[in-house]
Image 1 (tube, rainbow, N blue to C red):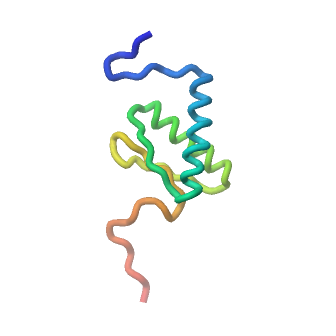
Image 2 (spheres, rainbow, N blue to C red):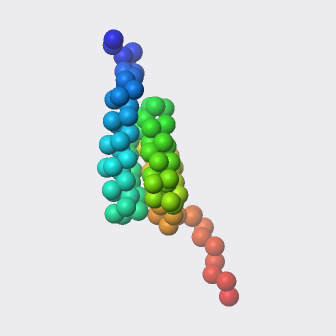
Image 3 (cartoon, helix red, strand yellow):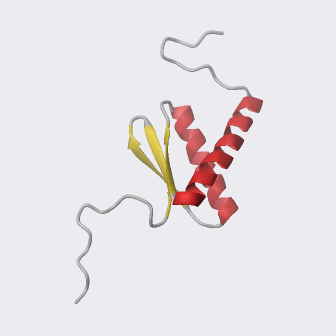
Length: 94
């Protein structure tokens, strides 16, 4: 079976499970080390896979792993305090 031009070939169930397990381990190690990771996600399937990995990491660690689209081709997974910086942060209270 050949993918459509520019498309992807779907993974078998076993391949999908292995891909998610590798992402869980590899991305989890990077997030644990520095608090965030950026990873390419070119298709809806890849984005869904990364969102699932973030949910699994959240359950595993007992703390929220956030997911944010960096652009059309990448997602950022991060822990609280390592996410987007506010363009206009609130002023300190006097």
